[in-house]
Image (tube, rainbow, N blue to C red; front, side):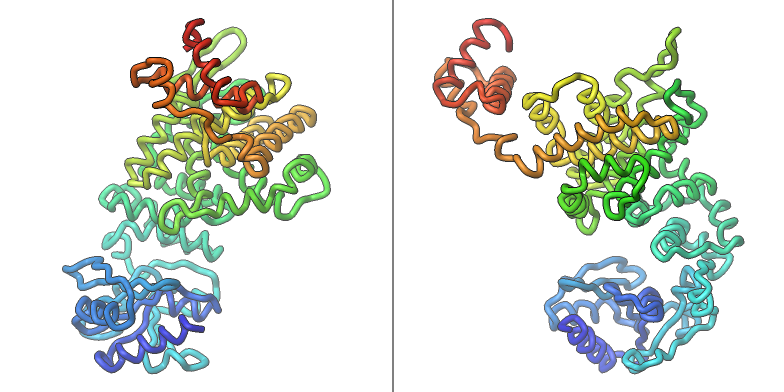
Length: 485
């Protein structure tokens, strides 16, 4: 209610200063769809930046200059934001002709915003396309003016479950190569918004068919037609997309389990943790981007190291160490698109460790030390690592899935996740000694050896082998004397 009242006051203030102003774009589209909008675009004949500063001061918002040349600014409030732009051309109709898609080329004069039904200015048939569920580019120059609109079309298709009109698709493919001139930050944001939606494999496949994926992530091209020995059924690229599909299935199955199939064991072992898993994936990592987006990016990149680690012998094709090699490639891609350092680290850790749960499933009893080492190396991203591992297993075996093997994998995931969500204090106990204390007591010099001793002590704590400071110092002495570190 307070947001609505604040918006009404802002509309009234803009109307007093610029009676010719109007609302346009996404907020009009969302209103017609019955959706709540958090983004309100205002167009004024002139003075958009100075007006934005006034609104920020008067209504206690945060002013953000977006484009000084085009007079485009933003005011951010707690739960919504407004964009103010200078009108393009002599009137509303000319301004609307420069927008991206018909469903975004509708406007409402300020004085009409509170009316029902909403009176709209709709010269390009946007309302009809909205009713048809169709994304149609506005003019032949749509993608020439801004190639990023190619990704926006895909994002809108994913968000609204709309179909992209055939001529629009053709032009998207024609201009895909021009995405290289778009800022990496804009590309990053559109990719992230698309991946945040369910059924993301469909849109990854669409980007591939239109030649978009090889522009964004040329590293994926090397996976195509890269043969993998059984139990793999697909080449490395198809396997990647299938892994993303299996991840979507896993998350859906936890929410709405089916009575038959591999979901039975999944829910039996992980059902009680589903709320913790969902909450973990929903945590915001950078701005509005959530951990789920980082996980899906890690899925796309998890096998990028395979072309560089390929070996063939009489037992088949192998990719020993591909996860470590792939982690470095994934890291470079994340940095290329200017993701935050936390996201870069997350994707690196997920890719680097995605084989770990499989190895733990093959090693017999799962010890406290093994669980500790897994979480020591993955940190907050161990949850995502477990999910990728399960999806990877399903995408590898497919219809040949062995129930006993699958159950063991899900059981390992349950043990790892339970330790993190239910017994974190036991997993990471308060250190008995600190590095400076080891240095002073044992006469050491600062360096890597101190860190190794601290990790050894903490592992012993987790195992219950060390319970006091004295025992910790004694363990460190023994390790030094025996040359273990």
